[in-house]
Length: 149
Image: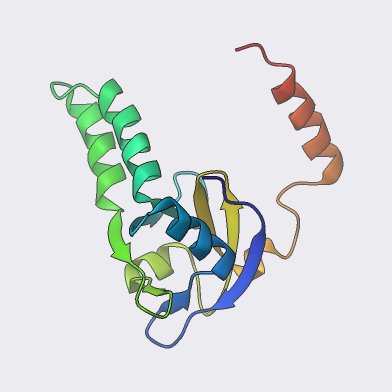
């Protein structure tokens, strides 16, 4: 499952928002019913994980975290504490908690951005400018693509 594209939407007074139909269809086709929402590790946005993508990330992290290392356990705790399990209602909406809306500085207008196996949710005004200038993007992409793995 790979999400692609970006779609604008609005939250209602309670913090509910419709998941864009293109993303909803992909989740339904894949049989994904539960979702996990958490703040992004790097930026002021939220990340919506289908349950399978969340479990994959969690497996990757827990495989590297020692239960006997206090600092590593604190990192795991911080990662888990920001997560909320949610499901779509019959209309395709879900509730973003006030805590997560504040963390991502979202008022009402949001932009959903497909990011491979997850969906990012940004305050629309934060996406009005490109994430980085075109020349910088091209140069960094070149470096990334020339990396040997």
